[in-house]
Length: 311
Image 1: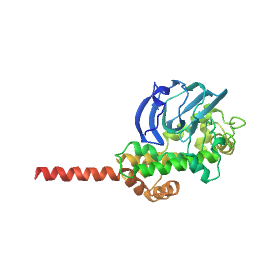
Image 2 (image 1 turned 135 degrees about the vertical axis):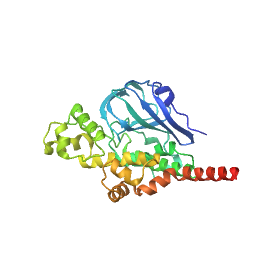
Image 3 (image 1 turned 120 degrees about the horizontal axis):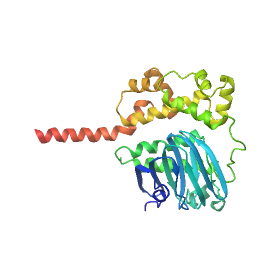
Image 4 (image 1 turned 90 degrees about the horizontal axis):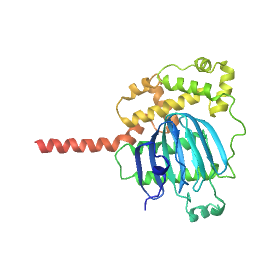
């Protein structure tokens, strides 16, 4: 039985780009948002929201707690089942991946196998998570939504669901997760200017001095404050954004590997392959084959049938 979700009730003013809901333990939606307020129904399952593109201030209130954060690509938000949200507002356009998980992330027998008491498991209402492990677990699901379905997808999704549940239980229960004690020292307006500059310059040479100039800071102070604000060094953040953009382009299957390497600032195909494999544990070619292989097979079959019919 498919998982019952609440996305259509909560995000009425968004555009749903794609969705998949035929798995019993996971439902996925790809949505595009304009700035503004969203509805706040009580969630009937646990929701994980991952920002894919865009960004801005996210203001939300739930369970008596007010949260404000500067959202950026790769950042995640958790809304546990039953959260009493009273406000959710986005300051700018955003594109997000929504994962809906059952109220019990894993069944009681699976938890018992690892000596975990199900009665004590409660996921936190967490925001602004710059968690690259979480992002890399979940981001392949976006590509799954935008390619033809394959026989092995159910097994693939089941593996991701188990890995995701384990990561959430290990890091984001109410006992384990704590909100940052203070806001980042790099004020949101300056940080957003830097992030916008990075997005617009992925194909070029992005120097630390140029990023620091966008924030009107010295390179030394900028590096320290940027890491405070994002959890990543400027170099690591730029590399991650290039890899994420390349993943999206590989799944579209329009450009050659050399063209993608140059388009997103890797300099050469060899460097692109090295950096991408380190981040994704696959070469760009292997990742493209994983995303587009079935589509190519279907196209070949259709072409063969067309030639046979015309013979």
